[in-house]
Image 1 (cartoon, rainbow, N blue to C red):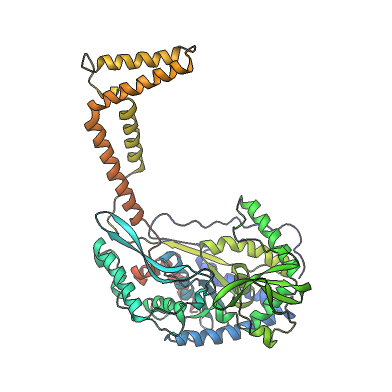
Image 2 (cartoon, one colour; image 1 turned 30 degrees about the vertical axis):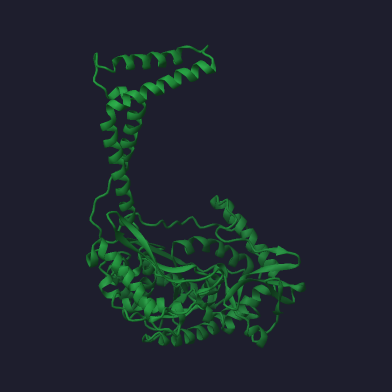
Length: 530
């Protein structure tokens, strides 16, 4: 576990969210992913650096055996067929158990397309995150098209998804009914071409909680795909993960120093001013050192620390048990320790997989993970892939231009402050008022010796004249205000029609498969089968 030599070189590769639909993007190029994964595997399997007292290559073999056995059991428990698989190459992705949009859904389908014979795809369900609510956004029209948020499940603070039950039949049917009601007001099935299938989904299985219910619903819409699902809460109970925890906990002071210095450098490099991004520093205080893990007790997460001279864990201000040397220590093995974001992706990338596939957020924060892996373990971080997409619902085309809004706003200000410009020229009834106004303006411009009171009086008289003349252009003023109001309503509709966060329930899986095709998926699928 040597410190990395020299300053870390931050990746300048940037993946931006596509602004047009349908469009998918990936870094590196999709047709290189398998080659990247195989290169990662060769390098990592040959590593002799020890992680928790075990050479990394050996730990990887153990971790794969444990993780894939659990994943097969979990996938089978969802009522899904377990595909034939091996460990020739392990492709991995993951996300929280939410009703994800197509830009996230594409991660699973892109992974599944690449799995070669003798390999395996693995979806890590991040049920260890605290999720306030699992909900779907649906378009709704009540004269104005807008988005409505329909909640499937809510949780209290610090409650991880693993502690949330699956929706019961009444809750599930009520949820689908609420989505259906919204869609019927906004255009029906033609607006959400995937809904005809989703609305017929059966009540999801209850045995695997909320995370299993959401995963089962998504996979039912995907059809058979050659990958396995595994909750992070299950992965965290493996011996390989416990060994990984100890590799950090026994060097908590050095890990915290590396972690916090890396984040400071990351924030400085990318001009980030908030200490919460990409995630908070680890606390070092009063003889305690915070770890990049949670302790789950009573269905709630607590920050986990090493205290008491590095010999014991503590959480929530109390002793939480001894810090052992043996990962199979029964007291330690019974502790429900869960990884935070950096620790999870470090473990998934270093120990479990050959290639990890991120979305936009993970692809950005894992630059910091790269630096921590290199500095703490003395290992060149394995490359990862990033993919995302934008897919809109098929609303009718057409959107007002921002130029038109700006024109209307300028016209409104002109009518309010310069109504004389819109009056007929000549000797009309307002010509004297116009003449007086411009004489006062010239007086303000020319008379530098006016007192403050005099300037206020002149300015007030100009306002009075404008107000009198506004009556003559009231009809025009009202027309512009109404046009702006209509424009504002149209802008709200444009925001609803251009929203990329509608859930996978509203889209046909074929449309997302076509996004994978954009990446070169058809060619790569053939190559994967060779």
